[in-house]
Length: 465
Image (cartoon, rainbow, N blue to C red):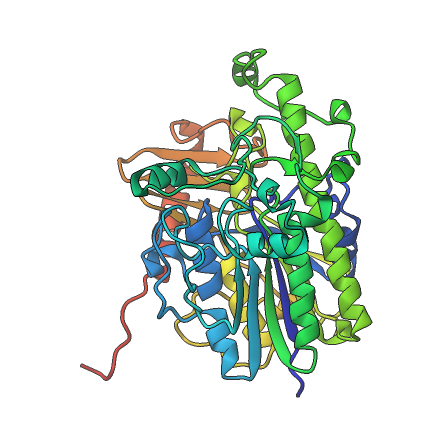
């Protein structure tokens, strides 16, 4: 059998509803909407951690964060970890990662150093856009040396501290790191981080068109700051964009300088423009696959590492306690040779740890027994597929689970949260103390305990005793 090529388009901080295919009538994502029309769109897909590094480590290894021992930021993924490219290598795959990987902390190291391979044959790593001397800045300097100093989207605060302590001098112009408004990209539009990821992904595909390959296109967008080329900002009229549907007690806290209408619309403007830019480059990559006559035998996955508050709960970014706007992200899978009845939506609960075993299953590769996800291949083939009773999110000091109707949160100090998503989809009203939900609370406690027992990862036995 000829195994499929695998393209994983992996964005950063993209909510499930930041796609036209998922019901958003404001955002413009024609190429991703087409992908949904041609593939299977998983409507209830949840990540296992609400922030970048643990979520990405879980995705790349097919293990829950607790099994990895990585439940918060700044914990490097051990180099000996069994990752997707290592599992594919024995079956003859050539693997590459272009753009963001974030398996290592990025604020206290020299990005010119050789990066651990984690099983990849080809790495062009850039975990942050333009603020480091990394693969992205080298690419931009080669294309337009006069523009390379203008591509930074801001220096992370921890990096500023490290530079100061280490006496490192940096002559790059860094724009404001966290502006609460949309900002036009300050350099040429073909020099964005998204352009870099797309161009080098296409170069990788073209170079390896005679091989069987796996490539992760690690887009940074639509992660903050909300910076996009003017042409993509021009797709939207900020004044017409909707505002978050806030409960009255939160809405009353807003002021002219605190989550104003203008600020909220401008932030959404920048966020949507960044998504549209990624969508544009997804279209280019797919055109390259068609040009090289690789489309029919390429399996495409589109997903993200976590969501974005985008003003919901009067917050930006991501994190605790992992409501749907953070935990529920897009998952679309397109595989012409392996799907049946394309254009379907799957409403069963699935998790990010399920993607890796799915890819192995589709490639006809045995699924190692230590993997903790479940293959989604039956859903792709339109066979009976129940999904999971709940999705688990793990973080240091707390856990939550999401069923079709409820989200339950438990913290190490005993604090609990219970939310009825049929009545309160944005999860504003905690029902843990409501006597009417006492039986539901007990059921959710039991379900979380069961899930935690299921996902424990003891060391393997070598014999009976």
